[in-house]
Amino acid sequence: MRWMLAVAALAGAGSVLAFSPFDLFPLILLSLGALFVLLERASHHARTGFVLGCAWGLGAFLAGVSWLYVALNRYGGVPMPVAALAIFLFCAYLALYPGLLGALYVRFRPSAVALRPVLFGGLWIVAELARGWVFTGFPWLAVGYTQTPPSPLAGWLPVVGVYAVGGLLAGMAACLVLSPWRKGGRGLAGVVPVVALVVLGAVLGRVAWTTPAGEPLQVALAQTHIEQDLKWQPELLQNWLDINAGLADGHDADLVVLPETSLPLLVEYLPEGYLDLLAAQARERNGDLVVGVFSRDGQGKIYNAAISLGVSAPQFYAKQHLVPFGEYSPPLFGWFYKLADIPMSDQSPGRDSRPMLLGGQRIAINICYEDLFGRALIRSLPEATLMLNLSNLAWYGDSLAQPQHLQIARVRALETGRPMLRSTNTGMTALVMPDGEVSAALPPFERGVLEVSVRGYHGLTPYARWGDLFALVMAAVAIVLGLRGRRRDLTPDRRAPRIFDQGVESQ
Image (cartoon, rainbow, N blue to C red; front, side, top):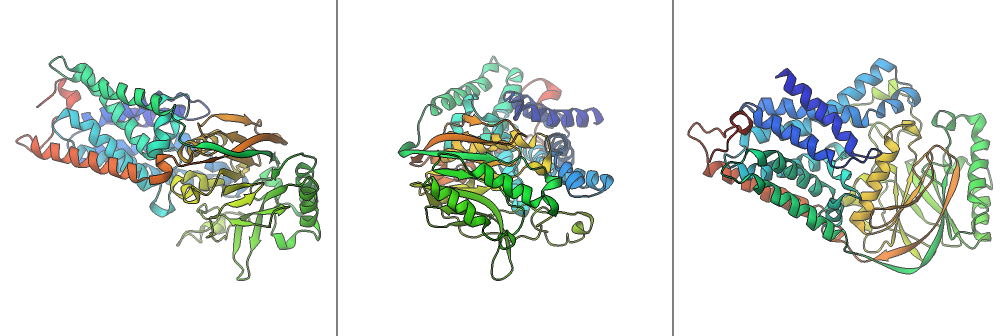
């Protein structure tokens, strides 16, 4: 059993190579296939499947999101042992979802081999949907994110969304590892659906679900590159204000964007006339400016927000999906803030998601972590013609966070059929087109401005129209088929045979 746990953890850790910046997207099939083989070899006790699934998940999340440690220890002031323990416990929590998948699969796998990939894929969808929803959700490293172009499966993303693509990957991996064990000359039977999904994905990838509309918008996306441990030092405030004003000026652009919390204090505490200066700069070029700020309303609630200044009417957006422990304290976790020193960590969620009307385009704003939630971004459609993400990943240093987040933005562009503009503090500042391709990007950890020309898009992708309904239906159908197959083909001792112990298919 120990070697099985070690293999599961290594397979989970190896899955990270399928994500950016490595982009070895076929490896996710190898990783999921290894987990499936281990579950097939497991005893018929759900506990064994649970432990194997947890081992896979722990390997995946420790390798893939351990950069959260940097935010706690280096910038949050949490002592090293406490920060390391906190990240381990968080990854252990995330590992519960593949653990539950493993337990359910081992407990309910059907005797009919052909239905096992179906059940495995359906359960995978449920596990990732749950991880993206429970306790406000943390869907980072959902396996469907690995299938950005040039993967042929990228064509499925605007149709069924990232969670359903994850289920397809799980089912495909199971088909591939089961195929050699099919008897009666039917070894290639399991390869046929895999090839069909790949070919159909490539065909779907050539479909333009949305179309450009209106005149091109000239946009300047600033990357401020202000180090997180210096950002809040009062004696450096004027320097940061000068950098922001300098980056916002001198561009022949319809829209200039400064990133998330670019001004590191509440709007009401900004020096007198500073916002007037920024607004005047925008009006001089007959354009607009969007800037990330902290704002407080009349009831004292603090928001992570974006405001617009310039020739268009002033507009406001407040972040709706806040980061637990970073931007608000979940219930019963007040003790955490006695250990951490995180500025502006008592925020309130916004409510209004209407796009901003700027430069003749309706631009849907999302701030940092919010673009992990595709079902939230499609609420602004079909009204929105462009997507704009403001981020500050300086909290996580030079880590996998930046390229992983850009890959998430690529999936959102595919799902919505809209260009995604990104203005960030340390990276990745970029323009992502509706086909998921990165049209232009700045090098990370450099101060600069990315100037791009982009058109708005009209129309709806199937995912934008139906959201995660496709994933839910796919999961429900797959699980029902798997369970019906189990009832129909139960062996006398009510246990489904294990394929990889026997080397033959039982019917």
